Image (cartoon, rainbow, N blue to C red; front, top):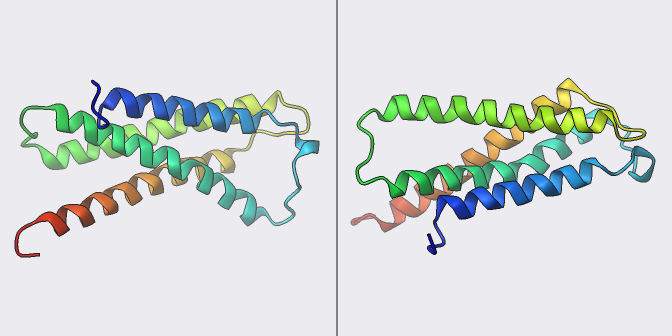
Length: 142
């Protein structure tokens, strides 16, 4: 458990980072700089959730590394991981948007939630690309 690749450590980082997102969501709207272009607002949501997705993917990878043998059902495992991630990020986005409903001058938005899920999934994709790149570099003959 003291290893840096502990799923518990990454799980705690997910909680800490989502707490940071919740803190930002608690800032009243009149204290935020208004963005007149809607695409920039969605881009901000995507960029805010990408690190969360990256850390979440690290947590899942660390959990897999703790298993003695990899699962022979790789395609099923991948589908489960993507489905679980979509539900996980949708749940966090729902919590975040519902919280914003009660913050002065803030609104809850379905499209913001969609942007949050996309950001989380893109963060997971970035971690996978990073992992594959380092793994291919470590293979003999590369």
